[in-house]
Length: 184
Image (cartoon, rainbow, N blue to C red; front, side, top):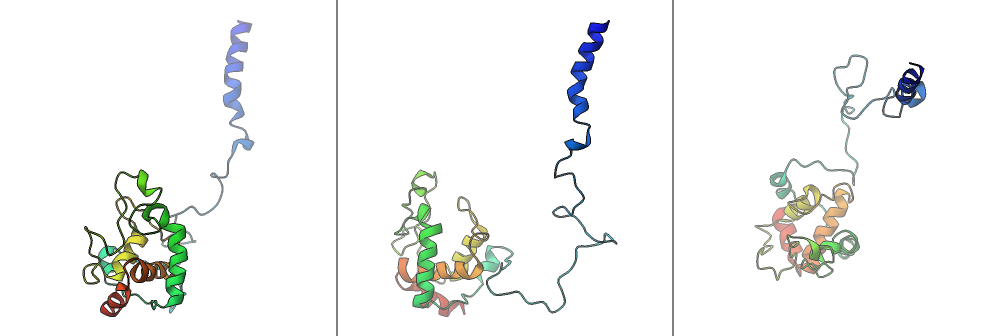
């Protein structure tokens, strides 16, 4: 009898240890969780102040690709913008699209679906500014696609426009001017 009682006590001891106050973790604390309503009336989240204006370079919310396609490129495709876009392209885009933009990057070579060829030598996409305006390229970076991840968290809205200018001016050899003029 004593041995069976001792065995039961030893089996239950670990489960009893979890009931002590030190077993609480950071997830079980008094705080506002994501998507949780805060405030004394529990009716809604705190709204933005009236007449608030977004700051340049912050996140731009776009509903979907149709809305992105209609967006005009607010960044002039000058040398400074193209240079910034080239540096950002080298960091974020070359692993898949390669330095040439043809989809021959080291990571892209391992993917089942080859990344899009962003150059004018593309058989699949003509990159005509009427068919694929600057907003389309910007939206694809923002929202992502079938294989391409979203870069909205990594690149600001302005930085994504710089990349669009680089793709148009350098990889597609001067289609940026046409696209920017037609989009505006």
